[in-house]
Image (cartoon, helix red, strand yellow):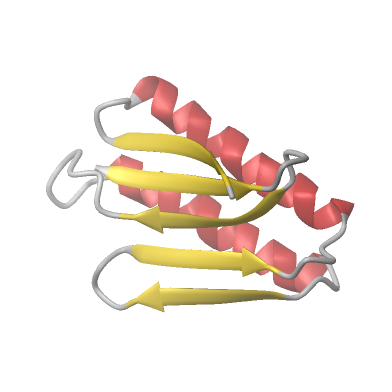
Length: 107
């Protein structure tokens, strides 16, 4: 199962996320993993290209794990992109709840 955890501060602002695991929907044609990966990579690329906000991003080769942490001064454009990612992943979760779990955690 894919676990997508969004970290939020006390004001509900997303400070980062971790996406870990494999959906195990289907061998060779895992549309849940493909959709999740496309949304996550698009969000990261958009944060990099469309905002001036700084963030750190780590991935573990072969594990399907990505961890992103925003700098404290991240602006509203980054919040919009991160909320869009959360919304997209929640949409996948609605249809494939046995393969992906979207979690919001206050830090």
